[in-house]
Image 1: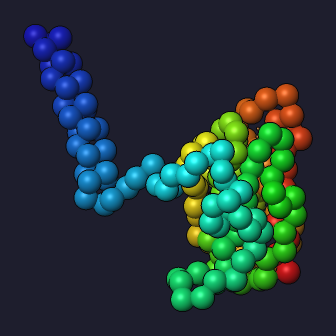
Image 2: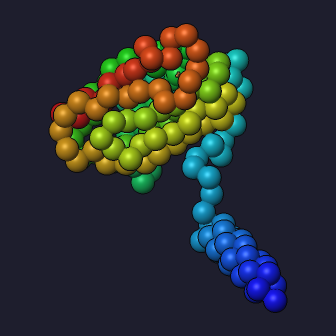
Image 3: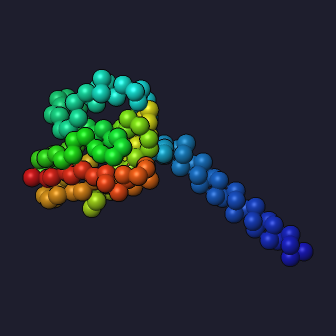
Length: 153
Ligand code: CUA
C-alpha cells in the first residue's frame, strides 16, 4: 500500500516536472542560449560579420553596435576593445576550431562558442571599467591563457 503511494507520488512529480519544461519551452519560447545561426568554421574570416572583428557601429537596428569576436586556440580577436558607456551592444562570437567559452567577468554574458555556430548576446554596458573575458570551456593546453578585455569608457 505504502509503495503504491510513493509510486504515485514519484510519477506525479515527474509529470509536473515535464509539464513545466514543456510549457516553458513551447509557450514562453525558451530556447537554449543563442547558437541559432550556422557558419562555416573554415571560412569564418570571410563571412559577415566576422570579416571585421571588433566594435562596429550599425544603423537601423535595435542595438547601436555590434561587438564581434573570433575565438581560436588560444586567443580572442580582438584581444582588447573599447566600448562607449551606455551603448546598446550586440555581442556576436564564434570559434574557428574547437569549443571555447566566452565569459565576461562581472556581467551576465556567459556563452559557449561552438564551431559552426554563432553565439549572440545583446546588452548595455552601463558601468565604466575593464571587463575581463575568459574562456571557461577547457579547450587544450593554452586554455588558461585565453583572454580578452572590454574596456567601457
Ligand atoms: Cu578556449 Cu578554453
